[in-house]
Image (cartoon, rainbow, N blue to C red):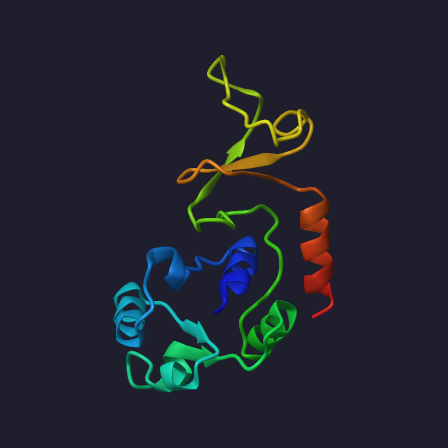
Amino acid sequence: MCGKLATYLRICGYDAAYALDRGVEADDRLRSLAAAEGRVLLTRDRDLAECAPSGDPAADAVLLTERDVVDQLGELAAAGFPVELADEPTRCGACNGPVERVASPETDGSPVDRPDYVPDDVGSRRPGWRCADCGQWFWKGGHWDDVAERLDDL
């Protein structure tokens, strides 16, 4: 129920796992996975938030009441979680994998396999990043500016 929120948190540099990306839906499985990985549960489900892994919901879960992602980010900021764009992306917004900087159109003299959707100047005149897990490419463009503007309004 918080997939868009997970994407925003990844853009902010958080290691934000999304249960449905892993095919996990059952509350007990979510709790045990969060405990095993040392994660805080972000949920709109009151029962799930109240039954946090350690038994202390304040330590292990944040109950979100808002539906809109920007409002949810505001709730997280109010709960003490910094919500701001990282100077450089560290996580893939799509899969949560680590991203690596693409310094030039070539690596070790070999051309980089650049997808068609990536502008030609990414990696040469402006910085770009590629997910080490899924291969998705990222760069600072209009979408980055839109996210920055939304976060600035918090």
